[in-house]
Every structure is written in structure tokens, then in C-alpha cells.
Image (cartoon, rainbow, N blue to C red; front, top):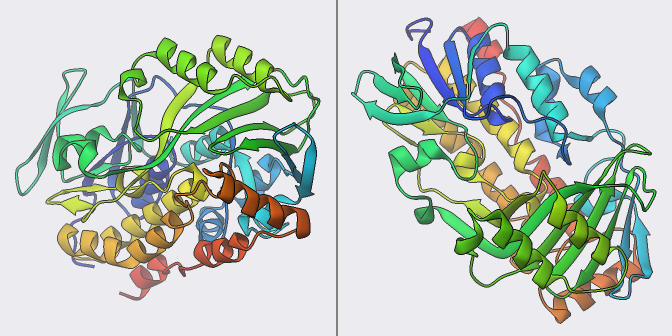
Length: 402
């Protein structure tokens, strides 16, 4: 190809999309730096799914054996009625549209570790730092970091999540692109007093849900309290005590495990509170700056596809940069190639709260009637179609034959 070798690329974010992009760019001959505001990789955590096209990405990265070992193998989802009584039990694949024995379910931290380990010895990682300013000069980008360091790069990619700093610096305030789906959630760990293993249990009333997930026997349980809220609770975003108070006031219930979950949420040192939302942008790049993963097109956890879509998008972005003669055509091809796939997976997160948190009594009654009478949700077929709606290009073959 006619592009200059060892182009210097800065990637902001070391979660899923960032290290994936770094690995493929390095493999294609780029010189890559990854900056991450956290002091270290975030480990452990709730499980995420790798399905359909995303499984092809990790297979091409040689990660399948390690990820199979990390597979948490959830075997059952139990749905409870408002009184806490068992209403239905089914395999997770009946809900997600996944394929048993093919799809991977791993802790988010385990996937991040795998991706980091592939790139750590080949790519420069800067932890405990962040981009303070960007100045796209047309033929390069001048970057100043929060640490005061100043450097120059050929390209900058923001892979720094739903609340992307890179996106705010270059494209403007998040509010322009943020689509709130009408829910908030709080996630945290708590003791596994319910003695769960390889399963999830879901309790619902209209507009509210409580979920407990457990993987290996004896490990901590992951709790999620999700609730409908007409407007985002802006006053609570930077106030952990206000978050705890809001969640506790929304779940006064004394059934099932709700009181224990609320008490654990009150004292959890790993509470993660946020809104359920997506990012929709008219374009994912401008000049020498582009976005990847949730920064460009967050799907929300209700889609079940955030990590999978991030893996696919990062792979395509690296491949287009490697096989195009300039970044302008590469960025355009990246977006043209993957946008339809992204939008189909974003559509899996429904405004009614879907299966996880039906918003109204009608939504809940409809879902419960389906659960009581069948073992597969109709949405699972739509999900499977979206998961596999894109065939990965073989960029390395293109480079070999160029």
C-alpha cells in the first residue's frame, strides 16, 4: 500500500475497543500509544457476552482458548413474580438469541486482561493520565496530557466510553449525542447468601427490576437495581450519597432479596451508578480524530451487545486504516462498513425496557405471559440476526495481495 509506515496513533481508553484497536494497528505496522485515566486495568466485574461476528474477531486474535477457559457458563435464568415466587426458568440463550456452546460469556475484566496481554509488550500504555487538549493541525495532532506532557501524533482515536472525554473535546458536549432510554441502574457486589452458581435471578414490577448474578460457587454475587426515571438524575451523577439515597427510595420493597440488596448497595465500595443510554452520532470522525466503541455508538447494556460491537468496530477501523491510502478515506470506509451493524444492535435495546425491566404493567404482563408459555423469547431471533449481521473483511489477505 501507499501509506507511510509506522504512523503514530494515540488511542484514549484501555477498556475493550482501545486495546483491540491497538493490537490490530500494531499488527498492521502502526506505532501506537494508549492513554488511560485509571491507574490500572479494571479487573473482575460482571460478565459480558461475545457473540456472532465478535467471536470471529477474538478467534482471529488467537484468544479463543483463553476465553473458553474464562467462560463463566451461565446455565439458567429464573424469573420471579412481584411476590418473589418463581414464575419461569430458561436457558440464557432463549433470551439473548445466543448459541449454546459457541458464544462466550466472560467477566469484563477477564476480556480486558486478555486484550491488554496481547498488546502490552508491543504498544505503549500510559496509565493515570488523560488527554487535556487536542489541536488538529491538518497534517498532525498536537496533544497535551493532564500530566503536562506534550506530544504529536498522526491520528487520535477516542475509545474512552459512553462519557468520552475525547468526544467532548473534539465533537462537543455529550448532550448532543446522548439518547437516554429512560432508566437508571446501580451495580455492586454482595455476599452470595442466596447460594447461587452459574445463574441469574430476576425480580420485576413495572418499571423496576432487581437482578442477582453468580458465576462460580462461593464467589460474590453481582447485584443490579434498575428503575425507570423520566429524566436523568443529573444532581446525583457526581454525588455517591445522592445515588444511594435515590436507589434506596426507589426500592422500598420487603420481598425476596430486595432489603439485603439495598443494604449491600448502601455499603458497597464498588457501586457503579449510571443511566441506561446510547450514543448516536451523525459522523464518527472529523479531521484526524475518530471515535470507536461506546464513545462512537454505545448500545446500552439492555442490548447485551456493547462489548461485541466494540470488538467488531475496532477491528474494522484498524483494517481500514491499514488498507487505505489516507485517513480520510479510511475513516469514511470504517463508518460505511460497520454503521448498519451498529444500528441493528442498538435497536435491540427497546424503549419499553425489554425483558430485563418492562416499563409498564402492560409490558410486564405481556412478557410474563410469554415466559409462562414458552421457553424462547421472540426477541431472541431478532437478536441472533443482529449478532451475525456482518461478515468480517479479511484485511490481512487484502494486504498480502496488494
